Length: 225
Image (cartoon, rainbow, N blue to C red; front, side, top):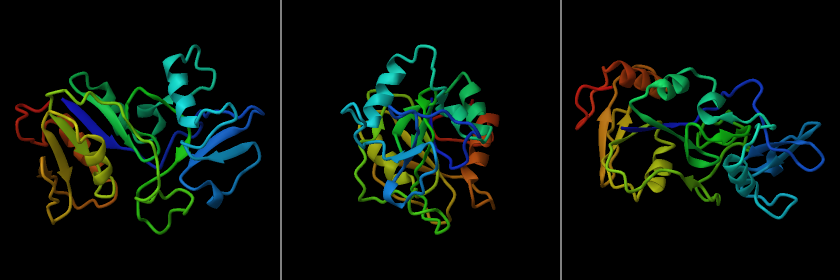
């Protein structure tokens, strides 16, 4: 079984980052013009051109292909986010974990990922620099085998659902979306399963734990994990 969980705003306190030629840390945001740059920091979008003519996205892909000693100290995605549920999911050997990132797309949990703050959340408290709009152009990755017949389970909020749908539209196996709202979402080709909880913020963390302990029952998946 493959599991996709959305990314998180709270990240490791000392995340690694890509670097400019003069040594500044690259801090990835949705709208650099709205961001406050700090000393030693350079704000950019993933698809902005870097000094060597490649986009930062291209450079990150190249870095992952040959990380060597990982001198930039980038963390695998499942360790970048602070909540322990990411590490619990990655540690479960019977599932294949992916992260749905508003900055990078659909990436394996082990993909080395730099510091960033990009989100689809509509929370008004979030800085405009971080909030990605539907009309913003991002060349998101979809690093999942679209020809797989394994069930693909999505754990995430409604703001991330269109992102999941778009990046898995070629997936051949069944796609199961766990949701929390009273109103059931609707989309052709997807199976929706409600996870009932009074928790409203980050409810998908509880759903992930229920998946791990076998109390979240999903169609076509017998006996849980």
